[in-house]
Amino acid sequence: MAVTLQSQLKPLITHLSLSSRNPNPNPPPFFVYCGPRGNRGPLVKGRVLSTEAIQAVQALKRAQRSNTATNNDSQSLNKTLSRLIKSDLLATLRELLRQGHCDLALTVFSTVRLEPWYKIDLSVYADLVSALDKKGGMGEDIDRLIKELELEIDGGDVIGWNDKKGLSRLVKVLIAAERRESTVRVYGVMKKCGWGCRGLGVEVDEYLAKVLSKGFRKFGELGLAKQVDLDLDLYLKACLGKDID
Image (cartoon, rainbow, N blue to C red; front, top):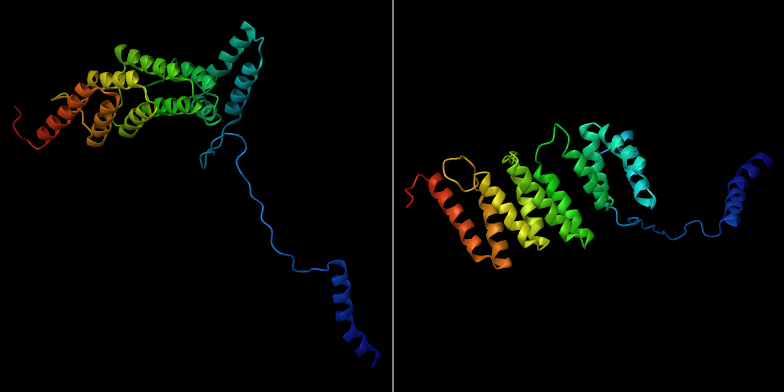
């Protein structure tokens, strides 16, 4: 009898003991909201920076924080960047852009352009222009960057026309940044590389042509807008096999 009574009272004693320690066993739920720290953009899913790229980013930021950098510091920094392989150098560039260190990203891009493997990548130019525009007050840097692109073309490099997305993005971000002169320069570069010229096999993308035409009208460049419309019209007629006057 005693054993039976003890077994019946044990669950009750346990319940009372827990209740005394936690008067409200079912508290209302609470929520924790996590927001972004600073103005850094999100990491690209699946991207992991190498140790070398992380060290390069940190070295550049330390050099920037130092107001008394010496020539030896600059030489050491250049040596650090020159030792990076292609993927790490480009990863360093994009990470600096993600963190909003546009001036440092431009320094890295100068190193990228000196590498023997370097070829014009319009997606990189678009990323740079977009970041510079978001930073604000760097319009002259955008124009300088596009002038360098023009010099690369004059120096014998060519645009990779397979990168339609990169070219479209570059034109769009320039128009969004209201860089009229740079947009005109890019159109001039496109024409030098055969865009809109018959017989060169360069596709005149209809979407890009409409973006350019609309942008030129926004800038008051009506003559250039009409020229873009004509480029598109001639190309479409050629594709349809029609005679062009």
